[in-house]
Length: 545
Image 1 (cartoon, helix red, strand yellow):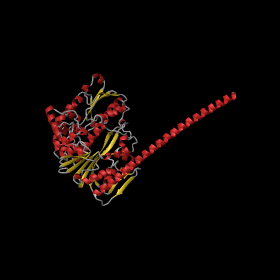
Image 2 (image 1 turned 30 degrees about the vertical axis):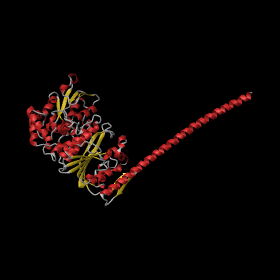
Image 3 (image 1 turned 90 degrees about the vertical axis):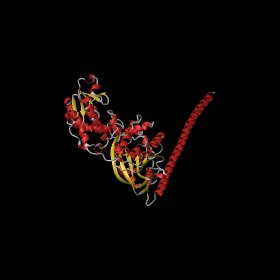
């Protein structure tokens, strides 16, 4: 962007805290104008828009900029816009491509920065913020001080992981890249390799490939993308971005798990993006379970994986019998809060896992939403309705989930990650930038199959929480009893609804009759009045005669 305000014009180099500058400037100055979109350079702006203004920009350490630049593509599934082929690589492979490009062209990052740096009056390091910006603005407006900058720097779209753990490389490669750029960046004090970027990545290297690397193969099969729900949908942009970040958090969690030679169940597999990922990580076979799969997806999976990914169209409350006690590992992403009967679902998963099998769940924690009176109507569906009405479901915070899973035979192992995602469409948050969108906490939890402590937790028609303890009961008998209890409560709930409808209908009839009686009473009163008037007139006429 090119942001014009007061006596200044700011040019934004991508991944250098430009949005932080814009947020503060828009808050401090009444009149601001974006005279250029995205990452336009000074050369893109007409002279009449910038004459007489002090121009400035921000720079960043070239190696840390490369890390953020690469991760932007990994998170969003779309190239950041420069040398796109480089971004379909793991981080170290990407750096090797950058090094090759720098040697052939005299620099990579410097080539991107030069059109800005060489055409502005002032250049500041983003690492030094907010001090230089405060000093610059304070020269023209003494009332501006550090206290005016109350917003923390906005996290860019690429910075959603712990980069120190996941974007490391060999020190020799990093040093060579910096050396190739040293003439340009040494004047800003960038002469050393950041220690936190030196190292090796643990786990399966293929996990770190961006989703775009598999996209081409699927396009060749005649379908848009193997990851349709991991790319922004123009009609649901927020949901699209949420799914992208979900996918990559889960993929990074999986890299620390040994899936080699394991039988895996992907529950709620959708387009099988994670199923493919687990095969690439060494899984022996992935059973992808969902209510239905698209015909083209079935053809693609059959032609590409030859039985290593098997699709099962079934209810989440009725896992195919052939999978009973067959899985070493089960995965569920963003599914629990959409289920009406989480307890029965947990019993089903317990039955399909081998002894000591692992179950990984990625789930949003709706703790802040429960108390939000503006929660929309769609949240009344599935378990959302029970979460909002009866927080004792245990699905609205981490402690509740761990306790619920423990009761149904899953021992907590660890938490792989936790992050605040925002915006989340559909509900407001408490004074988050004055918008109707707010962050939702999301976490990845790993459990191990253990002994079942409780039969089922459910709700009767009045919303009273029920729990039935069980000891020394077999899985099959337990499932039968749980199913019967759930079905009984469903019937009671249905009967209650029908009764309420019947009462409502009867009350409607009664109210209608009352209205008719009232109208008849008015008619009778009018007739009585007319009769009295006619009688009085008749008596008067007779008296005259």
